[in-house]
Each structure stands twice: as structure tokens, then as C-alpha cells.
Image (cartoon, rainbow, N blue to C red; front, side):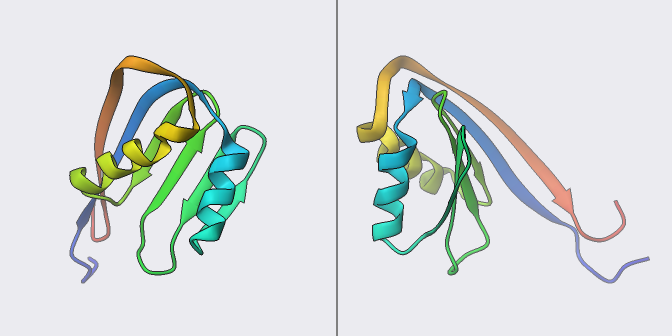
Length: 103
């Protein structure tokens, strides 16, 4: 039996647009000293200040790990200038993961 107390981490995905300009989005984060990694279809963004990450997919989706609802919605707003063909109604999916301890 582990002494670690189980924790929960939110994982939320949003689909907000037909696509994002990942190159311009990556450059905006680099100017703000975020850690940025980019593959062909996805942009990974994290900060040394917290243990949360965001993935931006070129097909208009965002996945947030470890943020609260208010912070997640800030990411949705932040990405709007880099979005092409915003959706009239965004789609959201929420998961809570338990980690640590005996699960």
C-alpha cells in the first residue's frame, strides 16, 4: 500500500474552430517564455511555473491538463485570434483522472 494520497487531475478538451495557425500560436507562446514543442499537427505548451499543459491541434481542438475551469476558458479565449472559421457552438469534453496511491 502506498503512502501517497490519490489526486485528481482535470483533462478537458474543446473544439472551437475548423483549424488553428499553430506556427503563429507557437511564436506567441515563445515570446512569453513558455516551453513550446511542435509536431506536424499539434502544439504542446507548458510552463516551468506549474504542472499543467495544453495541447493545440491543427484541426481546431484544445486539450488542457491540470487547469481549473476559469483557466481553461482563458486558453479558449487566447486561441481565438489564431483560429480559422470559429464554430458557432464549441464542443467540450471533461475527464477527471485519479493518480497516486492504490487505485
